[in-house]
Image (cartoon, rainbow, N blue to C red):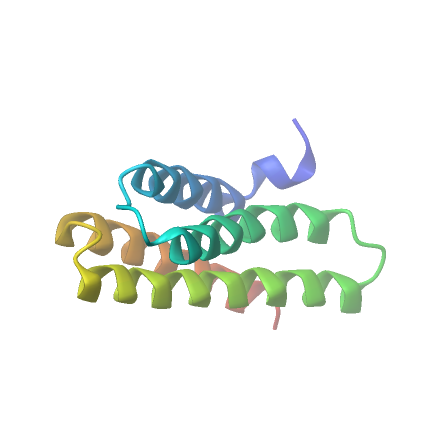
Length: 112
């Protein structure tokens, strides 16, 4: 097992990525930009968390974790947009937001 795979925040990021990916297939035509943004932001979280584990110094590690946190916040905003546009069920938005709150909380603690 690689170092990042042991982190709860990484596992939550992968779980959110799976949730988001399932929703992307159901987006109606005309929402490709929003779908692409969600795809990139949700992928950015676990990738930057993993990269932080391989960082050489504390500053570099914090930078990757900060990027992951920003991507999580972006995902939260995208879920709000999806809710307003009726692209996701309320239950899915709530589930995604709960994961994101956990992720942001853990990342915030890791960057202090």
